[in-house]
Length: 356
Image (tube, one colour):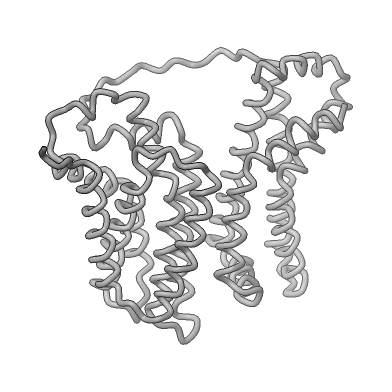
């Protein structure tokens, strides 16, 4: 039985998210060396706030595993798993603990590294907190999976609905928050923590402003899937949009406002964590450049059926190319102009037709 559960939950989870794990590994360990990772872990062990941020990320990962487990349990081809609840509770609980531990192996491995460093620095308070939190994640995931198994069609609590008129620019952000909250939380958490971490890392050594540009590049790439999500959302719910009498500039302006709303939390994070050695106006220019590059990614992805493997390869190539250009010293002003100009140019070319 355990072999079957591993094939259904563990193997399929890692196969489905292989691309995501690859990108995270390339970005995390390609950007930071082991020494810098150790410095971040040491800082987290001595800072309850920083450690709590790491716990929040681990909690988001747990929510992703819970959502996947529930999806697998309700899939038509896995309905035979409903008989699993007939297995005695102690044995069933042990199996769920093994499955959840396997699903959490990436963060368990990183937690093990943190525990090793905590022992070397004798930070027993942080050591205990990490151990207890990991055990709590495993237990919570197992209980959630078993509850879903025993309640395949749970009754939902219906709250009163509040009807509000929304402008078009708010359609996708509201849909993203309401129907794909995990995607929103993971995207914004990854992007925000990258920017906050780079801003905190900046004063620790003799870095120049290229470090902030690298952080911006990674934060923008964390949003690389959003353009495809916007396109899929409009194909499903707004089929009439392409037939509306709107010019390319009017359409582009609406997406400018939409992505400005999506990108707004990053401005707050940059301003809040702005290093003392960096001017505030530079941080604002940095954020504006990221806004333009988000629009460029949207213009490249909108309306095109791109295979995930090809899109992932393009994102990786863009990261390498952007990193090389940053190392050559391209200023933030050039990044800003290039992003906005290319986004507007591609959008104009895609939505205008020559008059015959």
